[in-house]
Image 1 (tube, helix red, strand yellow):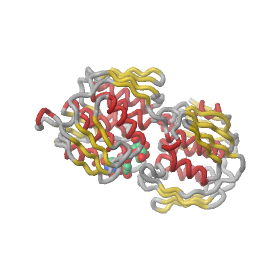
Image 2 (tube, rainbow, N blue to C red):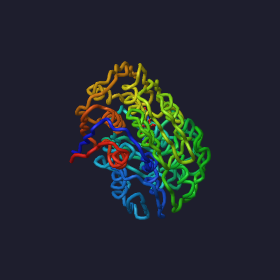
Image 3 (spheres, rainbow, N blue to C red):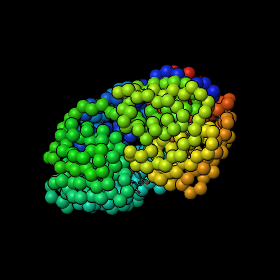
Image 4 (cartoon, rainbow, N blue to C red):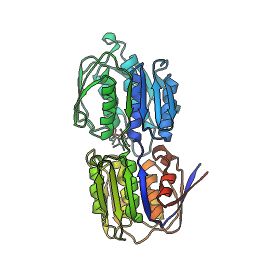
Length: 422
Ligand code: UD1
C-alpha cells in the first residue's frame, strides 16, 4: 500500500490548477445511464473514485472511455441492471445508479453501499422517495431490489417529495429518476450544493426539464427521452479549500486557478478569520500569509451554503496550530473525528465531547507516522505534515487517492517536500 512521506516546514508559493469536482463528476458520469445517446464530459478529475465509477458503469454495459480529463459514455447497450456488492462496497456514491436504472429500465438491483467509515450513512431517504414515486422496493440479502413492473408504462410517477434531512446524493438520485418519470416531481428540502446544480445543468442539456436548481425546492417535469450532451465538470470546492488551509499553516502565497469564489464563501470567510489575506478575481483566489500568527476559528458544519463537513478536518489542522482555543462542531456525520487521534500523535491538543472537538492551539507539531482513516481526514494529516517539524509518514493513502488529483505533484510544485512511497 502506498504511503506519503512529508518533510514539513516549507512555505508554499505558486499557482494551483484546481481539478474538476469529484462529487459533481460521479453523478454526472452516472447520468449517462439515462440516455442511449453519447455524453462527452470534460474536466473529469483523474481519481480512484472515477475509476471505480467507470468499472461499475462498464459492468452494466456502458461504454466508458476515459482519456486524461475527458470521458465519453455510451449507455446504448446496457444489458445489466444489477450493481453487485464487490463494485459498490468501496464507494458509497454507487447508490446513484439506483434512480437512473429504475427510470430508464423499470428495474434495478443495487447493493447497499459501503464507502467512508464516517458514520452510519443510511440510504433510507433515497428508498423512501423512490417508493413515493411508485417503485416497489424490497431489501433482500443486503441488496435493494426495485421494480416498476406494476406501474403504467413501467414509469415512475411524479409526486411531492419532502426530504426529512438534506441529502446531496439523495437529491441527485431522485432528480435523475424524476427526469424520465410521468408527471411532475417536486423535491422539497432539496440539497443546494453546487455539485447538485452542476448535475442539474447536465440533465437540462440532455433535454430534462428542471427548475429551482440551487434552491431547496426543485421541480422536475418528466420527459419521454433524454439525449446526448457535452458538459464540463465544475471545479472542486473541497480541493480548493484544502490548498487554502495548507497555506494558512505553512505561510506563503498561492493562487487557485479555475475556481468560482462565490461558491466558496463560507470557507473563504473562515480562512480570513484565521488571519490571512484573501483576494478574489473572476476565476481566481489568492491567499497570502506572511506572518506566523494563526487565529483560532470556531467551526460548525452545515449544509450548503454553510461550512462544508468535507472541510472540517482540514480546519482542525489549522486550529491545532492557532494561538488560542477553538471549538469545531460536526453536525452532518456522527463519526467524523477520526483524524483527531492521529493529529494528537503529532502533538495536537484536542478533546472531543459528543459532536464537538475542543482544540487548544500548540506552537508546533512534530512529524510522526500516522494513518489515514477517510478521505478528508487524510487531507488534514497532509496539512499537519506540511507544518510539522521533521518527517511525517501517512499510511493508507488510498483514501487520499479517492479524492485528490496528483496531490504530491501539486504540492511539490508549490515548494513542499512530499514523496509517494510504493
Ligand atoms: C455527499 C458527498 C460527501 C459529503 C456529504 C455532505 C458525494 C459523492 N458525497 O455525501 O462528500 O460529505 O454529501 O455534504 O457527493 N442521510 C440519511 N439517510 C439517507 C441519506 C443521508 O440519514 O438516505 C444522512 C447521512 O447519514 C448524513 C446526512 O444525511 O448524516 C447527509 O448525508 P448526504 O448529504 O446524503 O451525504 P452523501 O450524499 O452521502
